Image (cartoon, rainbow, N blue to C red; front, top):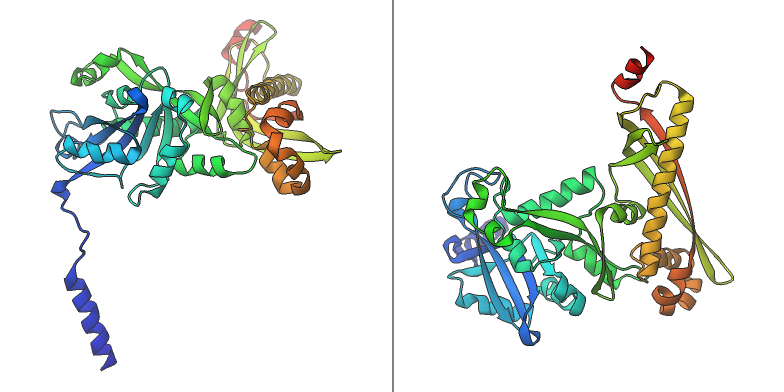
Length: 402
């Protein structure tokens, strides 16, 4: 009898349906949200909304429809929630954020207003996922960046996210960061956030037209452009990709990258980092912290355009030394950039807090401004060549021997 009653209750529950259910035809799927600074302290929100009929069957450059894959709307208000509500006067459907995968904040807004209030609103929204990626629009507005029509990737937000993903994996000058990551760094003890940067190459106005897809050379394109340093929730400095690699290396986020070295003014040798290990230790003496960084890398020779006998172990050792020197220089440059800007994006303070909590109590109040800029750091790099490539010695070496 009890089993029959349980079955009946389950059956009735299934028949009751869901009161919060929404018809798909009444929903506008927001794939990206942009934030710009308007006049009189107001906020401009940009909503990149999918046009389903022009996307179905061709997310990766197909030809499902004749029109644009997305439509961009803007609305003005006093807050993120206000802007979202006001957008209802322009969009004929209910804005739905469960599939939003990108938030773009303009550099003007990030510098002057910061991202704290924006992130608070997003974190409270039950629809919004904190795994959504966050980027800064450099030299342009978030609205313009989200309005560029992109080839290959039909959804512009997908273009940004995939570019970051592959750039992080293969180059190491950029790093994808989620809303959750930034919130964690803002609330962490002894660590500040860094956020990836994107810019528009070419003519932005022409890049917003559908004709941008019909040319082998687009009038405008989106490009990753290094990282942005934050302090207290506000953007304080842009770091180009080459310098950003050192910061990302110290955060142990580099998977693969290239290191080019000059060989006695004869040519360039390219070392491909395939594996690396970063170890950072901290010591505190008389209340003053010091750090020791050891980076071990293993890689292959990707290009040798000078006459060298790569099979010679002595030559390999000399290449390894030059690689070590080059990487060490990038690491030291990254530390200097962070110290000069007085923002601990490297998480040094967090390491002190974890390993020397008593010492951190005396340092934390003036860490970014006083202690971090003067902290001593020793850097050691150990590089080794795994393989010289498919060819032991370059063609040019064999030609030179004739």
